[in-house]
Image (tube, rainbow, N blue to C red; front, side):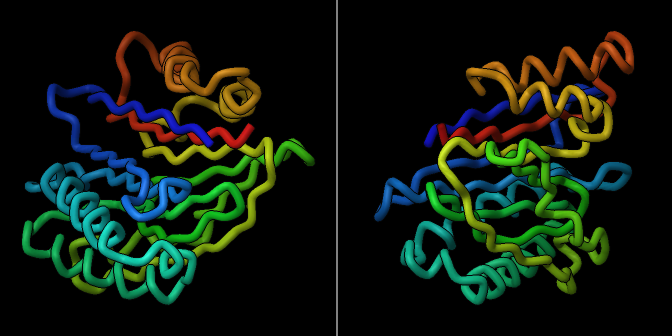
Length: 213
């Protein structure tokens, strides 16, 4: 199981996305993934995204790996994140997950997304499709949508901010999942985005790519 991370600003100097990916210190076969997109158009979005990822990562690292495979653990953990982020007076999206070779468990709120590509069917699935956009993370009233899904050998996962999925196009997403090496997935999707929108990325552009081949 390999992971690759990319994040860069789009359309402005500062990147209001934040991404953290680490292996669990007590179980290196458990990968902890957090991607947040600070709400633009108001103050403290970047800080909200940073605090969301940092708080979630610390709470997950302090949890037993087996607990992170249970939805109840994530429900409590993400509620704590929402309260902590509210101290920043900013809002953000968040996709949070513990990933093993066999399953993905976590929760999300907002419009960042998690896509699954099962090699058996070849049909892309979005596991965050039922998430709520509001109230946002940092409101103190956020409603996270939880998910627990199985994985098979050869599957792929992309976690991405809306600066990627809104602009790259579905065909580019399909071809990115077909790449032999996911280290080039971000560059592939970036090229596809610029081909559609012009010379400059229209929004902050963040991707976590996980390969189970």
